Image (cartoon, rainbow, N blue to C red; front, side):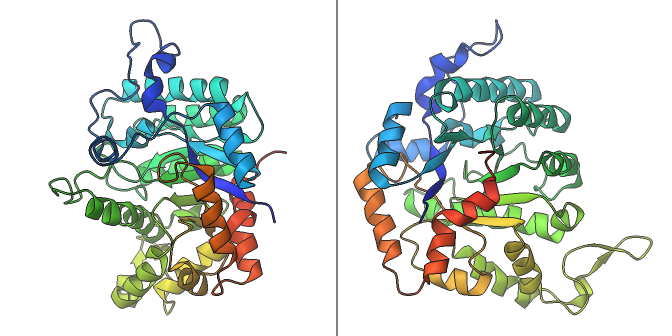
Length: 355
């Protein structure tokens, strides 16, 4: 069984001076995303030991010890890219990060693969950066944040459709990854764990619902989007809530009577969601200790779920990660086919690396 880490991380927050060297003269700053209050960082600083800063060699050792074939690297500070309001700075920061990731990690080993930060604040320039990252840097796709002030409404907004069209043309993946958890009613919590528990899945649900309800996956049927780091159990929960709320009176038609998006007349909203899950348009990251994974697979099918180590964020060492993998392999609520798909097969279908 091939095990693929669909969601690993590097600590760009600790490498600001390195990344600054990839910025234009006059724009070089020690932090890629200056002055971004990130609830993740606040928690890490106040409540547990540092995330650490694994080098490429550290990552290879981690993969060897856990039996993982390869990983796809996401940022740490860059998860808060949705908080950048200045278009020019978003472009500079994302481009510098992508160049640094390519030079520092991706060039070191084919087992370290990358997803680019996309300056979605300017859709045209975001398209250009996605095209460059995939075509010139060999990245597997682009990352969009699940939350942030710079998102114009939600990711189903028509303003982002040209970006989805480009990803479809390139044949690359897009990943909506949990980032900042601000302005969701959680900012003033005096303890972090409920903000973490609720902010991760809820922010993903909002973006998934926006894209589903506004017909993104029908307009771009070859588009592949993953919703990462919110667990698997929001999927059956959202199916139940959509079915409770949706009926034919909610069908949206244009002036010519054509369906704008969403379930067809007489179709259950959960079946519409499930169709995109099973046909490879929507993927969902899960946690190895996700007790409800079996229920999610039963409700949504085995096709969408992606294993992610989250190293070095939640998993600080290879022993813990391997223990979680072994526990998943021993679960009785998942079939062997379910385990094969979730631990590696689905990641191949989502990322489609050019081996």
